Image 1: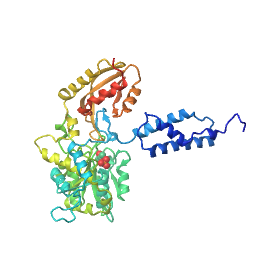
Image 2 (image 1 turned 60 degrees about the vertical axis):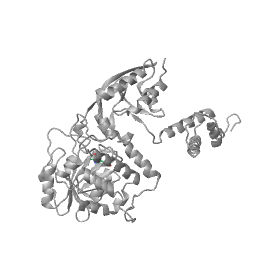
Image 3 (image 1 turned 90 degrees about the vertical axis):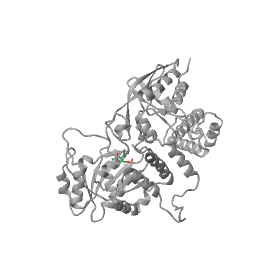
Image 4 (image 1 turned 180 degrees about the horizontal axis):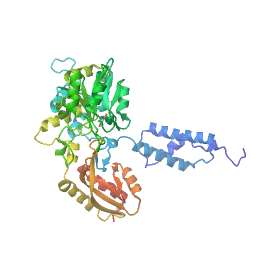
Length: 470
Ligand SMILES: *Cc1c(COP(=O)(O)O)cnc(C)c1O
């Protein structure tokens, strides 16, 4: 090697030197040193690999520091932290589904910070039942004989399958029209497989008759399963038996009928907004179904959980399954769910439960959203490089619930004159309290239905940080 071409390995920056340069800067995201060190070490290692593989383009030291700072920033932004939801999608799975009520959040703080009576009976001083009070509240609210709570609705379904479609009777009959993917790797056939249940598909995608179910019943049948089509709809040449017909068939053969309702409406959805009626848990149990399961963080508006409700003997059996222990909720979720269900019970039929999700769904465009929009537009008057207006928009329930429901809403209509729309969207995501909006045509929109009123000021502040006021 000639003296004029230095050994490329000698040009690879040292980890300590890079870390020192980073520590001298004031614009670096506050990550713990252990994470920063790991990131820099990884970048140095990967550069060494590149050189080994023949790469001769070694970045200058300053450029290497700069790119390390960028990786630190992007790792820092990936931590879970609050985001303003301007998408108009009320139950946004990427944004954590339902926001919790302040009662639920306060109960988490209280129970999490101190010891609590999670499994202690304060009357006898002996060991008590975990979640016993919540189970009573749930059964009362739903109008069920019994109820229990698991990690999520997928877990609830697995537990019901494990308990009812097992051993000699390991077959579950389901219509081909209900072999759905709920989202993110949750497909009904896969869930059934994971539960060791033999899936017996009947009917066709668009048409399944009661006879299809009846013909499939054998001594090995453990349950008749109905899955609510929560995230899509079918129209045209379709038929399926009613829940009542399935219940009658199940009763005649001594086979339990189970319905996975998913979205989990508790109140009448049509009373919240001009949207269709979503079957409630109580309503479906009243049709004679043996068990239902619903999600806790969809239309119910609580924390992530799955609720099973229905026959007391079946639920007692499910709670004895070894798997139940693996899928149970922790104390923080139980207390947040308890606060949420208590709010439903306190509201009764007299008023709308005071839960963020229900408030958002029912907010009035003229009385609530428009005055807020006008105030934001006024606050942004005279900003350079941004045209600001308001526009009628469509908000949605989201979370794979009620796909047909369109809720009239109001959005900020932003037109940047000095940057592209994707750039504006990116800048809004880069703020300390990021704002997720959406691009529609040649506008960037922020739907105010899903923005909490107390966040309006922050939306303005973020826009002022990006555009200069003149
Ligand atoms: C959303 C949904 C599920 C899954 O619920 P998670 O609580 O997310 O596990 C199951 N079934 C139906 C019908 C759903 O809509």
